[in-house]
Amino acid sequence: MRAYNTYRSIVFTVTTAVTFFFWYTISQLMAQNIWLGTLLSGVISLGTYRIILKFMEWAFLKLPRIKKLLFGSCYLEGIWVGCYLGHDGKPQYYIESFEQDFDGLVIRGKCFYEDRTFKGTWTSERVIIDDEKGRITYTYITDMINNTHKNQGLAEFVFDRINKKEQPNRMVGFSSDIFNPKKFMSIEERVVEKKILTESELLDQAQKVYEKNKEAY
Image 1 (cartoon, rainbow, N blue to C red):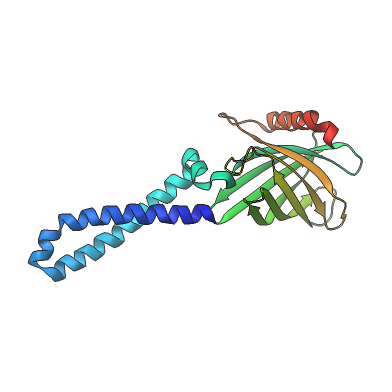
Image 2: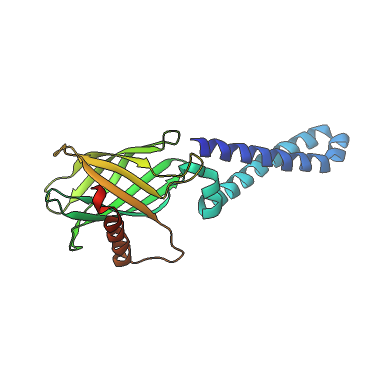
């Protein structure tokens, strides 16, 4: 992943700069005792690398602004809400949590009927983000309350973005379960809020997404 390569490059650059600073400060010791100086330099280099690695990892993954800059146009983390039309043609609202790190992206979703009663959940399996084409594809496992078994499916969404360098805050795509190959069109938007919203408030947002785009379904 490009974000991970950028992260490693930054860690290497910072570590090199800091290590050279330490080497300069112990240069006199190395002149007096080269073996002791070499050993001390090795210990300092290794320790400095580990400290910087841990700090950078914490900063890049825990601080949203830095993480957003690091992942760039691939940054998808957050809460997404949207809607698709069920078998009966009625809107089904959903809330998704996108959790992103260097290992990849995990999507956890909850689905609700039109009257907002709980329908079920899903979790992504294999997620592929194509930053160049602005597309995300993933398989998922569903666990719906009306089913006696869990079902696998495939979803593909296209980013709605200004240009390649911008993170998407809206996606349009489809999902299709194995037991029913029919494609269900879906539109979702990222919820950008400074406060934590309740499930009811998120469903309000999902309903707004549907109302804005109902002519597109």
